[in-house]
Image 1: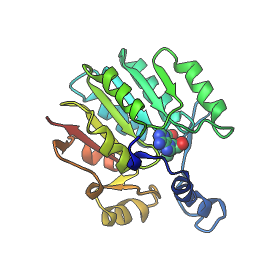
Image 2: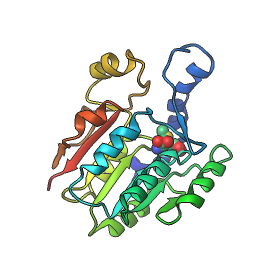
Image 3: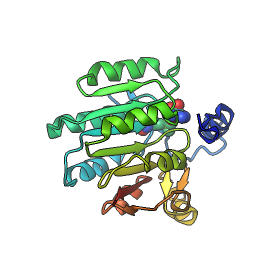
Image 4: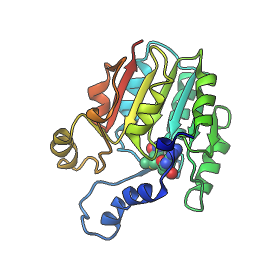
Length: 228
Ligand SMILES: C[S@@+](CC[C@H](N)C(=O)[O-])C[C@H]1O[C@@H](n2cnc3c(N)ncnc32)[C@H](O)[C@@H]1O
């Protein structure tokens, strides 16, 4: 494995400790970090419903695959799966997260039980070369949406953009175009408290902003198209 892609659990937990500030009541005004969908946690701003639906229903193609890095409890996976059901799409969803623990295993199993007609859960590190190769082979001739919400969002983006094909979409979470935008329009408006990716962190050769960029940025997703 490439040294750069090695998973660093210490770094991951350092980042996760941000939620400590809320649970200890140090910044009790902070926006909620999740909501429940079918009793399953979704770590998103609740307006994701409208924005995601708008995004999916204005795509000019039906995706063959949807790949999600960072399953967590599986709430977003379930929402996307239900939207695909409503649209009567045959799309397959693969969701990847190496940490299925006592924290989230019941929720992940519950989601899979209900979405097994289209969702596969891979208990893997999304940066593992074997995983990347497998995703590349599977999605090779199918238009694909990548929802990048794993342990390091710019890293997810900069890896998966290399296997994305022309017209595939790459969506990266906890995103704002820059820190100033995040502070003024997101954090100070009490919309979301995490900003793990700014445009400057992303490698954007052969990548352009999607038409839905502004819509999705309002719920902290950066939305891009591979154009070559
Ligand atoms: C913010 S949560 C994802 C939230 C989820 N997508 C949702 O909307 O509810 C980030 C997840 O990334 C996972 N993660 C961390 N490192 C990862 C890696 N290398 N590959 C895949 N997932 C990873 C963590 O275990 C955690 O569950």
